[in-house]
Structure formats: structure tokens, C-alpha cells
Length: 303
Image 1 (spheres, rainbow, N blue to C red):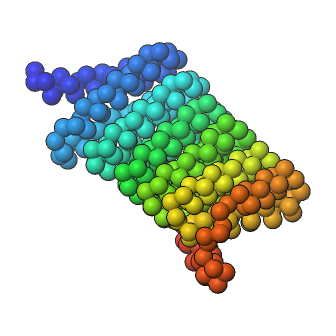
Image 2 (image 1 turned 45 degrees about the vertical axis):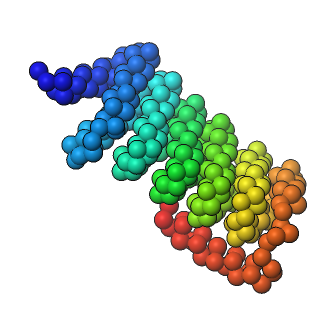
Image 3 (image 1 turned 90 degrees about the vertical axis):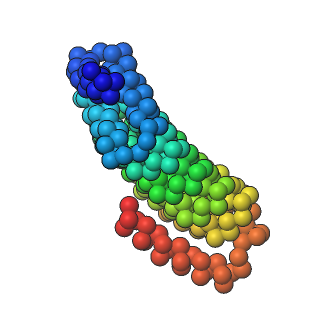
């Protein structure tokens, strides 16, 4: 039997073992199977690119995701976290090898898992998946893989909103913080659109938090915007700084209306901390804000 055929059989056996261990509620066995599948994917990523090779890797990605779902059915949060981390690792490895279709496929499976974990009320699992999305977003911004960065941000927004609905606090806070970090990494690479997307999403999440009357979630969004503003100032993205100031002011006004005093104070302090001295002049600001609002509308349709 050839080495390739033996490898394929080993992959099939490992997939079967992963499902069996998951449904047997054997966390250790499930984790071991997922890790083995991750390693198979890594090996294939480094082989010559071909249609067959790509299909094989995507099949492994889908299988890891399906085992993660089986683990979620059995409420095995550690195995769920392992599945999303493995997929995040595959996405990052593929991105590093400039194999974007595989990276995006793995990222999309992580994003869907994150939503499913959150919908099941599994805070630890959903947070773990959000962290994988965050890592993918930060790495892809470093190598200027803009589609992957943007998708990471969109998935994190969706996860945060779903988690906010059912009050999965760890997932909400982690997702918001990670969005700010992706924005900061994008600012460092002068990826204006990705940085702007992060700011727009954080504004939406801040407003959603205020609507829910959650001071802690609103303050997390405000803090993330303030941190992003610091990064944006450092790297000279003036138009994004305008958006961040606009976002903070929008949230501040909304917190005032909803009588969220601590969050209102946090937004006011964040605005005052921004280095707005180098912003565009007032007329240019107004024009830029109109452009941003138009972009905001288009972006929300895209997401």
C-alpha cells in the first residue's frame, strides 16, 4: 500500500475516532483526534498546491468543525475550544503559506462554530472560538490579507451580538476587545478600510450594549475604541480618528439618553483622551463624516 493511501486511511480512521469519542463524551480522546487531524492538515498545506490537495485539506477542516459540533451537542466545552483553536491554527498556517482559499474556509468554519456555541449558551466554547477569530484577524492584518481580516471582524461582530442577546459576558467582552486589537494591528499596517471597519463595528456593539442597558458591555466598547484611537493617532490615520471620535460621541449621547452614567463618563473621558489636534479642519471633518456614514451603511449591508 502506498504512503499516500495509508495516510488517507489514517485520516478517515481519525475522523471516525473523533466522532466516536465525542459521542462517548470522551474529552481526552476527542481532543487527541482533533489534534491529529490538525497535524494532517498542516502536512498537506506544505505540499504542492493542487485541486486534490485543496479538497483534502478542506475535507479535514469540515471534519474538525463537525466533530466540534458533536462535542457541543454533548456539552464538552474543552473539546469545542480545541476544535476552534485547531481550525484557527490551520487558517493561520494556510495564510502564512499564501493559501487564502483554505485560510478563509477554516476561518468561516470557526465563525460558524462560534455562533453555534454562543447560541447553545456555551460561554467558554464561544469565547475560545472568538479568540481563534481574533488571532486570525491579527495575523491576517500583519500580512495584509484584507479579506481574511475583514471576515474575522464580521464574525466577531456576529458572535458578540449573539452572546449579548443571552448575556455570555466572557464572550462579549473578549469579542469586543479582540475587534479593537485587530483594528490596531490594521492601523499599524495602514490598512485604513479594516481599521475603519473595526471602529464602525465597535460603535454598533457599543450602541447595542447601551440599548441592552449594559454598562459593562458599553464600557468595553468604549475602551476598545479609545485604545484603537491611540493606535490610529500613532500611525497617522486621521480619517479613522474622525470616525472613532464620531463613534464615541454617538455612544456618549446614547448613554446619556439611557441614563448609563458610568458609561457616559467613560465615553466623555475617552473623547478627551484622543489626540484630536491633528484632525482635519471642521469642514473636512463634516465631509469625512458623511463619507463614513455612507460607508457604514454599505458595510452593514455587506455583513
